Image (tube, rainbow, N blue to C red):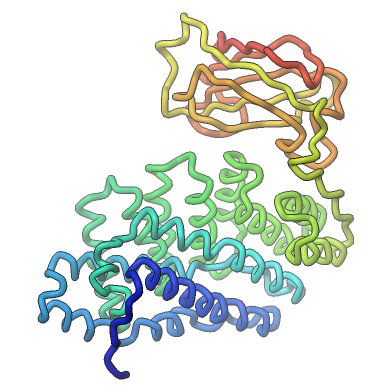
Length: 413
């Protein structure tokens, strides 16, 4: 490879051009083999393909140190950034059961295309070192043995500094990129212990755990998926994993329910939505009617008010706990018709509930004659009531009512 000739382009623009090219290349590496593979066939080693992108970064890195472009500390940070990018680009997709139809491979590919670029962007914003990139790190390359050494060094650092959840997440992604899935799952477990209410962490842990135990979602992964969905019932990756787990155990009815829940989060006319509907049809199910777009949500469903805490309970309010505000029908099922999730530290809170916040198509605010608005502070972060939670509720109101005041005034026994 010849020398890189500088051009009059800002480092920021250059970085995003290179990042875009790498994301496209990574998607091709992950998705094309997935769509070509037959059910039950072992997935190709994506780590080898992605590592090739960085093959000679070490040489360029050493040259920059020798030329005084960067220092030793910047070199160390650059190594960690390489690991972070590699981990994001090789995020492990859900593992389908050996008997799953080829359509499931399309769904897994959809999930990768939808989630991988966003995950890589968020990881860079949280962990990236833009100054190192400005110094030329975007052009540096490292060999695979060096990447392994960097991951091992990160693992040693986490033993000495175990209270850093971002470090554990980085280690989990990095171990997954190296296909060391048992160590990846262990790292995600450590991150989840420090971020117990993070659905993203639980879904990634379930994914890594499934790979570690022979590409099956039975057992522990299924439990983790359930915890993720309890925190965020509309979490796309958790829904895709839940549907895959149901298909693995041949529970088509449950799989259809989860695919329909995922379908509700997709644009109705998108390619992804069409493929999900076809999968539902192959399972003998019926795709749910798409919910109305946000702009056309029935005005009569818009229900608003405030949540306050009774003075007697103010001292017992944990500010880091999760606050759920939801509406349920006065008669019939107690399943929430609309729900929002906030932090208890935001109290007192002004809230708005409408049909766009429904948990299931058809079970909406506007479908009920009367509802009760309930607020609950959960220290565990789970949607199910737990002893010690703080809660309160309104009296019966008609959907579309404004000015409702919900007072948190009791402790769940």
